[in-house]
Length: 269
Image (tube, rainbow, N blue to C red; front, side):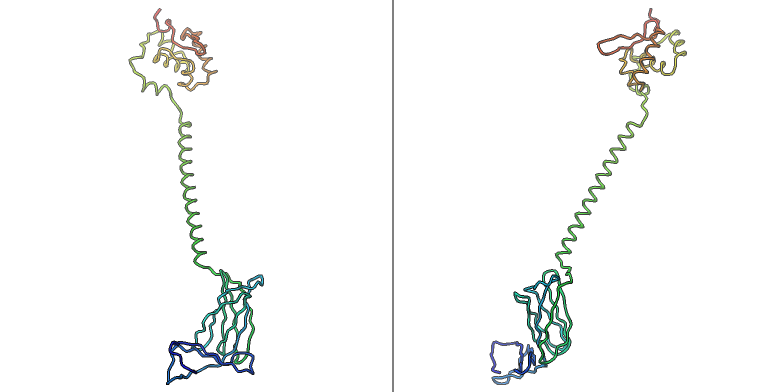
């Protein structure tokens, strides 16, 4: 063959006219020059014509075709045309032909015979787990972890607030204790023997009302109800009973009822 100085590697194919496929194949990466020519050693080969299709039997154009054959030759990859077809010359022996496109791949194993032309169909049925899929999976995982973290944090905050709310309403309130610690003791009124004797005959609730009035001089019925925790209807009956015993006076001031101890009870008459 004539030598060209700008060629440093080449692929050679020899084809006899009386055979259907290619007959010899050679790939030279280092050319030994002897004058204006060189020698090339070729190995027996055959031809392959193939078609690549997807799972729905649609032709796949631009699919990458790779070859893994025995021997010392590395076969350069090729690509399918617009109709999903490809053609290659491969060394004689066992070869694996692989095709890949987008996110799917497929392959076939076949025996290459010298001078023959084999036909092969490759289906792209295996999904490729590429880096893009892994990246998307990582993003989804991070988002889910963040959502779970925020949900747990919000639930704990809600539970804490609910517990505080329940504790505030579940604790028994003792208005008399509050009054004893918060009120100025200088406002307490000294009572005489009559008041002490009468208080010894009162029920605990009636006594509680009288003690509040001794500390505050006068209170509205609503405030007594709040401080003692007594329902309004029950308190009204208790005040009426104390009024009959001449212990308290009830004065109507608009919509409010003002309660105070009688002068008779305090021995001011």
